[in-house]
Length: 245
Ligand SMILES: [Zn+2]
Image (tube, rainbow, N blue to C red; front, side, top):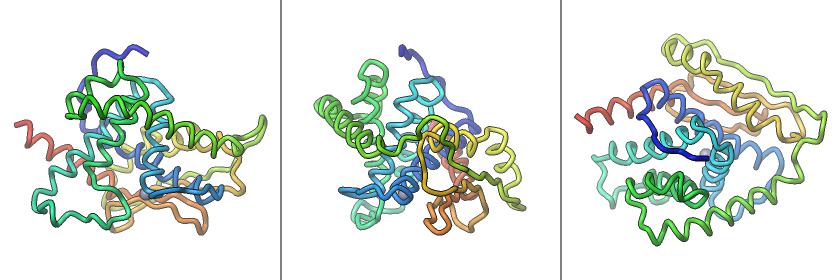
């Protein structure tokens, strides 16, 4: 596709786009858990890679913007952690560092399509030699995921039952309204999950959890996206505006 210009996201788009990436990431955990997919390396990295690959493959302006906003989200999250020195960073965390997650998404983007994403990679400072090796990374990552997922693609007529719930909330009514009106759970179900023959019904839920997070819970087979996390993304957007100003 020919992608010329990206306009900066509004607050709402930024929140929704970062939330969508997280949901796709959790779908990665869910597929790994429900389908028993072997993972060589960090599962968190594998889940990030799958989310990025699904979005890259869609090749729409909207999905490209999800990728860009998600990478921005991690760069901002990294910048917001200014209280921490490099030595204090959580190198032992199950996730790679925020800045590494940001660069990995951009690496896969530019590895998939230099023409569309080259300028973005330049802008975030992804070294040109690395941009070239990202082409190999993208090919290997996408072949690997395709190979492990192929046997589980839903045959004609198969439909996995996917339950959806935007749980009641007192503290995040505005966030709930936004996520529901943008149908982020329906999008996740239709865009990704229904392509796979899952062995049992699964649930996608947005709920108040007491922390800005998202989870795949293998028992009972559900993804929980916390209202607090969407609220956290709104905070990052506000933080970005203080940087611009
Ligand atoms: Zn994860």
